[in-house]
Every structure is written in C-alpha cells, then in structure tokens.
Image 1: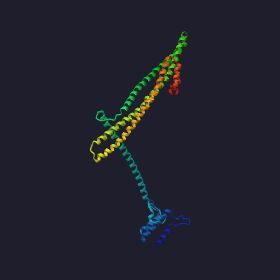
Image 2: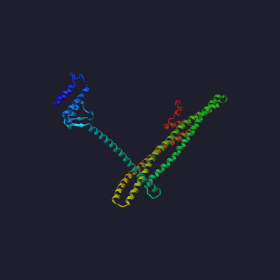
Image 3: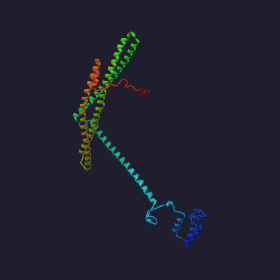
Length: 362
C-alpha cells in the first residue's frame, strides 16, 4: 500500500510526457518535491532508515564524495567493493617507500665518504709518524742503494740541463736582437746610398753585407730554436715524467715502511685474541703496500733505463746540430749552414710569420 501511495505521489508531482520531458514543472523542482513527499510518507508509515536512504539516493542522486569501485559488476557482493581511500593509501605508501630508499642511498654515500676519510686520516698519521722517526734517527727505512744513486744522478743531470736550457734561451734572445739590429742597419745603409751620391757605393756594400748577415742570422736562429725546443722537451717532459714516477715510488716506500713498523710493533706486544685480529689486519695492509712498493720500484728502474737511452740519442743529435750551425755561421759559409738545416729537417718560417695580422692588431 505504501508503494502504491509513493508511486501515486511521484506521478502526481512529476508528470512525464511521451518524450521523457517534464510538462509543467522544472526538473530540479520536481525531484525536490518528490523527495519531500516520499520523506513524509516514510515518516508516517515507519519505513527503516536504510530504505529511506535508498529512496533518497534514487531521487537525489549519489554522493560523489564517498565513491567506491565495484569489481564484481552490477549486483555483485560487498566483497568486490574497493574503497577509493585504499587506493590513496597505496599511493602514499609507494611515495613514502621511495623517499626511504632515497634516504638510505644518501646515508650509504655519506658512510662511504666517512670510511674514505677515516682511511686517509689513518694512513696520513702512520706516514707522518714514520717520516718524523726517520728524520730524528729513531726509525728504520728501506733503502735500495743502486736505485737511489741513479735517482740522484738524474736529479743532478736535470739541474745541469736546466742551466743549459736557460743559457741557450738567453743566447737566442740576444742573437735575435742582433739580427734585428743588423736588419735595421742594412735598411739605413740602403736609404743613405740613395740619398748620398758621393758615398753610394760604400753605403751599398755595407747594406748588402748587413742583409746577408741578417739572412744567415735568421737561419742560425732556426737551428738554435730547434735546439732549445728539443732540450725543453727532454727536461720538462721526459725527465719530469720520470721524476713524477720517482715521487710516487718514494711515497710508496714511506707507506710500506710505516705499515712495516706498525706490524713489527704489534708483533712485539701480547698475543691475545684482540691483538691477533689486529696483527692479521696489519699483515694484510703490509702485504698490500709491499706489492705497491715493489711494482713502483720496477717502474722506476725501467723508466730510468729508457730515459738514459733517449737522452743520449737526443743530445747526440742536438749537439751535432748546434756545433755545425754555429761553425758555419761564424765561418761565413752560407751553403754549409743551409745544408745543416736540411740535414736535420729544420724548416724556417717565412719572414713575418710570427707577426700578428692586421685584424689581430686591431
């Protein structure tokens, strides 16, 4: 009976035509009046609240703030309903897990850096202690007498070759200045030869002589520059590379002696469980630094051998070039001077090649 009354009330309040459109009332007003009529009938009849809610949903529409997803299709059981709040919770859990993984990665990097700093500090302390002990004569050091003598000879040779390089550069600068002066003097003599008819021949001879000396001087400068360049490569690249390896070898020797002294000190102490563990760790570090020291000592020996062979080869060629070029220049033998440059494959730069262009000067 109640259902028939409800249907009558709804029919009375919401008249529908054949096309489904409202004839007399607007859509929102008809729904609101139907909901009020139904609510009043439910109060009178005593319909349970859940049924009233169902009717309210049918009339007024669903509440979009409490949406659920039904996985079992229409008419499915309550087990197939998935609240949207659970989806939000899973996304929040995924975000929190990602942030936790990022924090763990950052913490791992920080721990690794701390371990590296700790190892570096411990190694520096041991090496400093060993160095001070050696300076004050309380500690022992590993010495390879033959290799140490070769290293000292190399350092002395490098100092002497640096002096040769410095003097050769000074000679180049002075001789370049002389060539430039000869060039200017030749131009002046040539100009005076044109303006002084009574001394035209005398100025002309001197102008030709200065120009010839200038040309030979430029040829000699090419030979000296090649000599300086080769000595510079030998001293500041080849020898310096060997000395860098020697420096690494000396650092490895200091580390090796530091860990050797540490192991000897531990072996002289008591032999309990803790000390035995420390002795085992010290033995491993000692072996690592011993292998590094021996490897670098072998590298230094090989480089010293190759350096000596290269030095003899380079200096033999460069000293021969320097002697022949200087002798030919001061003997006035232009042909021999040019032949010397051809013999050593030296190509002279054309005049004005070192001068900047007009655009660069601007």
